[in-house]
Amino acid sequence: MPKKFTIPTYLAFGWLTLAGLMAIFGSFLPVDSYQTIHGDFLDAPPLTGGHLFGVDSNGYDIFSGIINGARLSLFVAIFTVGIGGFIGSFLGVTGAYFRGRYDSVVSTGFNVVLSVPNLVLALALVAVLATNVDVNEAVAPWRRLTTLMISLTIVIIPILGRIARAATLAWSGREFVTAARSMGMRDRHIIWRHIVPNVLPALIAVGFLAVGVVIIAEASLSLLGVGIPDGASWGGMIARGRNDLEYNPHALYFPIVALALTVICTNHVGDVMRGRLDRREARL
Amino acid sequence: MRANFYIQRLVQLIIVVFCVTFGCSLLLQAIPVSPAEILLPVGSPEEREALTKQIGLDRGPIGYYVKWLGEFVRGDFGDIYYSGGTEAVSSRLAVAFPRSLWLMIYTQIVALSVAIPLGIWSAYRVGRRADKIISNFLFTLSSVPGFAIALLLVLLIGVRLQWLPTLDYQPYSAGVWEHFKHMIMPVLSLSLGLIASYARLLRADMIATLREDYITMAASKGLTDRRILWRHAFRPSSLTLFTSAALNMGGLIGGAIVIETIFATYGVGFEIFAAISGRQYIALQSIVALISIFYVLFNVAIDIAAGYVDPRTRNRRINA
Image 1 (cartoon, each protein chain N blue to C red):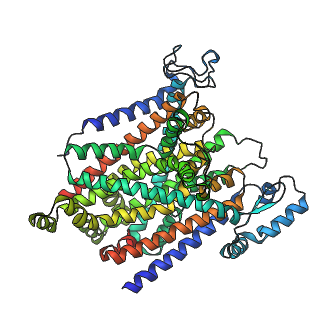
Image 2: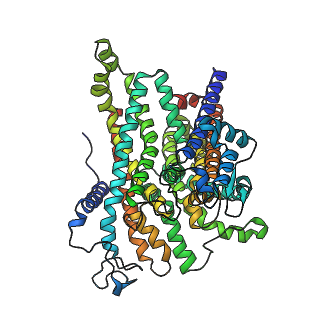
Image 3: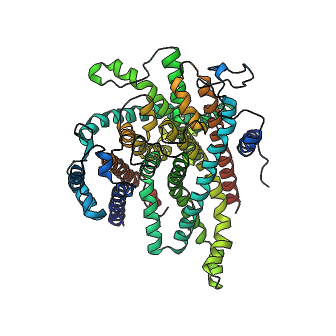
């Protein structure tokens, strides 16, 4: 029997659920828009004038910012890990299953992408994809967001793809796969019925870790000024708060805490799931 | 068998290096506007055409790559274009590379010298309270991004306490203390996360080693716990740790972009950032290619070294 979850795991699930709810229902909550300027409360510390987390030096309410930032931070992370994980695991699973030249092309491709440090890769891709002729012309926000997500997806593909490939290699040598093959089952069905269900748990566990990687990467890109602009994500808020950390540090604390908590929770959940997998394997 | 292993690694290495550098050169072609237009925003059409010719962009993707590669292997990494003139990328890197190298070396030294005792101690006390506290603390620490630590350090030590300068880099020639004063905070922000992951790796391997028969044997001979831990258990358990530390070298030198930008250390990572924000795509291409080659070479060197030290690992990474 799987052991019951421990208290930290419940807390992690709790925070992730809360962040998810903020992301989904944030715009319906009775809080000010994150873009409303509270000119009377510039630099207000937390718990003044009805501003739970205070106001930053531009007059933006930090509590609204955190709630609103959850949407883009989580959306970018889940979307890129979802799409990147899908493409990566498709390549990895089919590569490991069919082997041969196709497999060497796939794994060389993974190695090539992995040989560029992931932040460098994301940064280079964002820079190239979002280039305008005129330096002074700002890149449209939606275009920045799309290029950001495409770049991060490319970063994620080999990370999850390699896991999928390694897991498939281990499983496709098992007796039940050989048995299915000798019975004349089609490759497509073998992959779908026998390989995927076994590889999926490992992928989901690593996927949680990848969500943390993407959240940090998105925030790093924002800090470097090529991420999501205008404080619309937690990373964007950190980038903006960094400018006057001397006089208004709480504008920095809250987004950092929100971001770090989320990453801690996704890492913890991923870790717990991976631990269970090992136990399941050990029992076999 | 052994020769085969090296040849296989070498072929893999060459393929990956070619693909990475070619991919970098394709990036330049993927820009939606002509690179000459970006590099010479105020130039006349003739000047731009001359530049296109000089860079080799008129020769198509393959021709451009061959020309770039020819110059790259001879140490000419292209130029950075200013409104007034040009500067060789190699001369910028000559300044930036030592800074990144020092940063990386200090980070590894700090990370390893804290992580090793922590990992050993928590493996020795596995399941006890000390282990639980250390493990949970390290887990939390490994999840906090480096830039968050950096910003909090700047705020606390740099701005509030004013103990250390928050910006700039000083070489050794400016005084040893000056040098270290500017390095402490960047090194701390980079190494805290590494401490956590190194200690976790070592702990896992140590726990496995401590269950071996020869450890029981050593204990029954009456050796002290300290001697057993350091002399008998640490060395066989440290292989994964040192492999992973060495693998981090390549990643660290390019991955410190955010930290180098926050602390204005102006190393290689910052050069990448500067190339991107200044839209110097040829410089970007050469630096990314350089970092990737460095990284791949390190990987192979580690694989071969690990194969020497522990023959069991020799085929591990080829298939996985």
